[in-house]
Amino acid sequence: RSVLALTHEWQERMRTERGAGWVYAADELYLLAGGDLPDPAQYDDFPQYENGIGLASAFVEEFERTLREAGAAGRADKHHALTVVTGTLFAPVLRGLLDANGLAQIGVLAVENRLFGGNVSVAGLLGGGDIAEAVATDGAEGTYLVPEVVVNSDGLLLDDVPAHTLGERSGGDVRLVGSDGAALARA
Image (cartoon, rainbow, N blue to C red; front, side, top):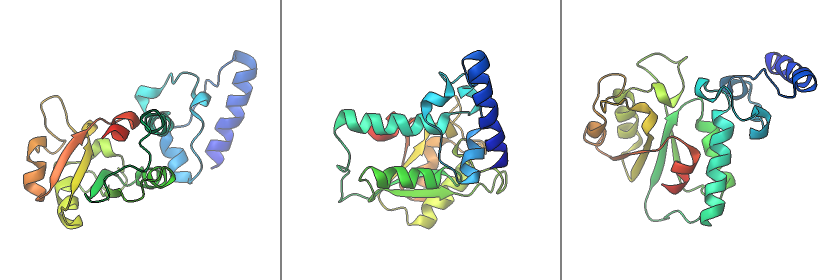
């Protein structure tokens, strides 16, 4: 929290001097501190997006905008179990986002990263073995949506598990979906 406070002080100073925040805290700092994510406008067109700075705020904004545009809030199929798979760090944000948008019936499965250890908690670094085990342990009922960021261009996860085998390995209906908020809202 003290790092975030210092970052915000620098941002105010830079906005006065340069017209842009210039200094941005990583999403993990906000999530670990339990604070609110900044409004997307605070990221000044996301100059550090590829470095994971502002991804969470952009995700929330895209998700909510897509639901509004589609008029889909609260329309998830109540007769088919749907669960979104993510890392442990983003799971509380995702749970809150679904609840706030009338989608409380959709589950969130926070997968612990055993491949790299507990300090690695983002979805993009999950291994196929960890995802398959978590889905199986969860009961493998309904459909599990896994963000495609876990798969490389060869169709493999970080532990060389082929993405197309996740369903077979877990005993569940596992589907890859886009990793941004709009893609998840559409799914």
